[in-house]
Length: 68
Length: 221
Image 1 (cartoon, rainbow over the protein chains, first blue to last red):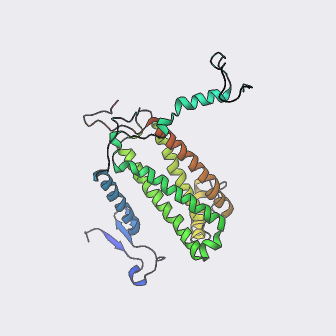
Image 2: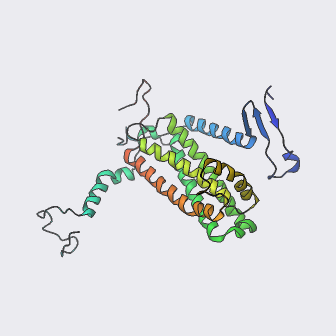
Image 3: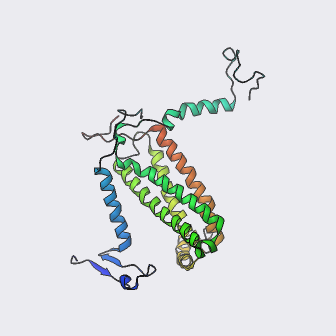
């Protein structure tokens, strides 16, 4: 783990195997966010990057499609 | 409204008759002028729409359809059903996860439109309606958490009341009033979001998708 980053486990989720236990939090300076929320945001960024890069099938059409 | 005795499809004097000034005719002409069907239901798109970024908006609409469909079932069957039966659990989860996808793809759509400056060329109203949809959706989700009828909703309501009172809106938006929160969640706010989404889509289809920003500087005309 990088220096300065701190994970604050409020309960050992893996050991308890319960979904209603408090989440583990990621704490870096003034940033405090639960790991599940952090994973969702990271996944959204990855999905956005893939959407920009991945080729679109049958990408063809008018020059401007009649757009104003 | 002008009344004619001629059967439909047989009006030989139509060309010679002075144009009617009825509101139905003016409304029809306005719809023909501003909402042409080839723009509302196009069969071709501009070349720059060939990107997955443009799919985020329609996936958001698909998620909204699942949210509304599962919400109708939940509101019909009631809290005991969605808490105590296996099928109720399934529809409760369907509602929850479709809301998660709705927000995720709405934010991805927002990112895409932000970076392509989707408000250009007379599309500011479309952008602002999107902003209002985003804010209304957050309020709808909040009232949904308050409508769960479990300990979590009670916990949220008890903790939220002080913030609402501190903001000065607790008198007419009382998070401890389940009937008010449930009514807002299942009736007024979904109707508002649906109307705004329809307006948003019609405005997008009327003007078309915004053109890409010219890499050499400045927006394309």
